[in-house]
Image (cartoon, rainbow, N blue to C red; front, side, top):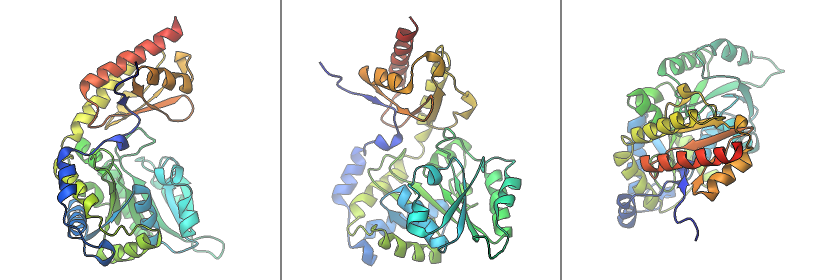
Length: 350
């Protein structure tokens, strides 16, 4: 007899829409969004801009497309974009800035650190016939590869001020900005204010089925809208999708604290298992990254052992494993997952 239900801790992208979202999708008013005539998309974009403290918003199919549209709208071909060396844009977006935008990424280690300003300043190119023009800095909050950690607004303010002092603009990959806001106990706009544009995902912890929203000044969004069309992101009667996003913004933000608590509980349990190493201080939101080297299991063995017992997780490079808590994983699931992990590790060490 097979496993009836997996406890899926691979990502918060696996969340499924709520009944309220499905009902809203079924009854959404729609029009042609490329013509600007979809009332539900227009409402989502306006609501998103309000939440981020920006003038306008743009609904896109994915966070990656939203980031790339932002880079295209902020830069010209041959420009250089400063990013964190562990950022999603640098790691997971297939060199799209070079492929689609003709711009070069300049990775800076620990860009989100309070001590990064000297490294950031050194990375900004002086004017020269020999150098590309530094035009844009991209930040990420929360930071996926750093374990869902939150960059404090004071650090973002310092980077934003430095950028503007040098005539640069700042884009925020805020895929999980609401997780950061819940962790800090602040409205998301208090994080977004230290960026010229910000995108956030509806389809991760907020559990909508599809979509991200890019926000910024009205003139910026006008440029971005053109690049969305260029990349194939004009979705016509997209109100069916936007309706779920509106429900997500109304009903799913405050409950993110439950995911954070479940992630912390998982991390505390993992820390007690012999051979598993992690830094509890980095478990701030819904992501847990641990090192399994001392268990004697390699990542493939570890993940396959979990899967055989109904738990899904992702390898994260080297000996690292990543778990992500989300709305479809309850506290009882976390307890069960910990029991499975204990059992898999114990069988290896017998």
